[in-house]
Length: 445
Image (cartoon, rainbow, N blue to C red; front, side, top):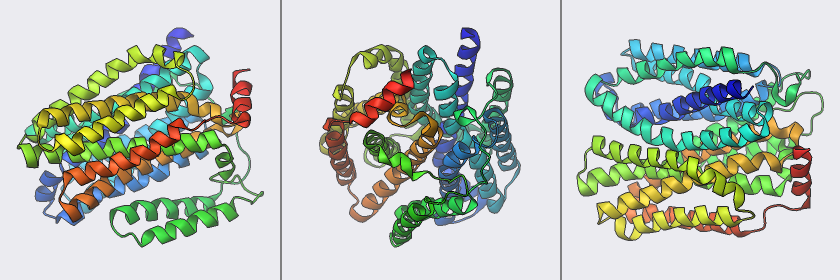
């Protein structure tokens, strides 16, 4: 059993790593793709925007579908879609087909993290569960740096088509899924109620208007707010398996972790967007060298996760949250004050942010399943992944807007300093009311 669980963990880590790396690979190649496809900068941005929209909606969709279809079947379907999209992208020179290929990639790739989290929390024994959650958190950090480096390296030597071919290698994880992923549904039972297509439409409206509102037009956020109220009213229906069960938001500790995770994801992807621009514009450092720096920092953070995991389990209460948020706060403060003039200081700031992101992700991955009832864990983890993707979209979008308006890297970094002050306040506030403690105790029985 132990050996099979170890192989399952390796398979899940490879899947997560593929998904995270793919999210960032094409950011590096946008300029080359714009020239190769002969389109404008605004058009080529849809290569990223379309992927973000689908993967945000898909993460919670797969979490819900896992109650209707076996998780193993969904992962096989997801990998197949991902590889199909990759092969389509590799063989085309048409802009519309490239965007379609990215949408198909995202439709498959959005299953990776969501289903990996459900499998880890519901089908691994307790000792292996924390190890897997630690490694998944570390892979999120590692994939960010590796994705940037691989994107620059492959684009430089073999062109942007090679990025699609590289991602098609995910097909080799199918063997691990077939051999090591157990058969079963989310919460260990199949849902028989009709699927909530109307609820899916409301959520789709929320996600699309939020992402496009932040990226393109702030007025769309009005529709975002309206869709939240509509989902709240729709959630009272009893005749269908509600697509997004809002009752999970009744748990204070869960909501607290969601906000922390949103800020953590926004800060991490925001710095991945800002640092290459800072390096190129202020210090004239090549994209390839910047990629090596980010990859080196990510690999160091990944290796550090093996060391810090035992320490994390020993630190109780809010101490570990406060420590990691303070570390990230110092990183952005260094960038805002000194990093715009000294590249070495900027690199140290990025390293602190990356290390903090890795630790905080591991802490949240381990703790958040204990803040919701066991029967609602699949929905809770789906919402958690959705919030992460929304944070990843929010970070670079708001940083880009500030940079466009002010042309100041210091102010862009300063925004994240203020955001992390909110995270620091959240991490200091007592997290677990009595109800959440009872949930945690019941899950351990």
